[in-house]
Length: 127
Image (cartoon, rainbow, N blue to C red; front, side):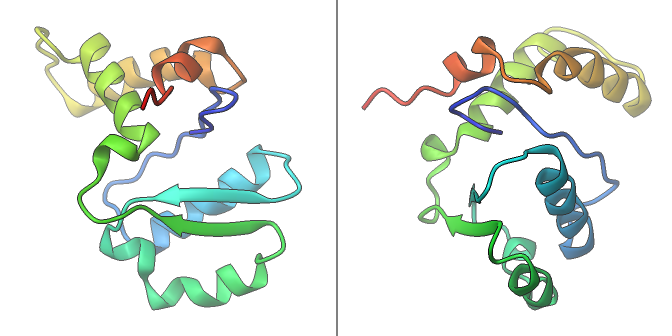
């Protein structure tokens, strides 16, 4: 999630681990054509995985990871996006299957693969 442009890069995975996170990072690098990407992350264990070190070293010119302080979801823009997604897709609605939930998620977020004001406004920090 780019809080400046509102653009989001989406990856689906059965579970989060260092392999799926590395795959997502590759997609981010390919999707966002910036000279340098600084990705702000929470402290989930696989974001710090030793298996990522060679990849991160190989891509250090284009990619830098910065970690939020522990237990600070209020500083993480993606948390606001998840709130927005749950409000639009799952609150007060019954979805029969995970496949149906993924389809609704994709229909919603496919509109935000390019810069947009909706997600940008959701992620504004007013402190």
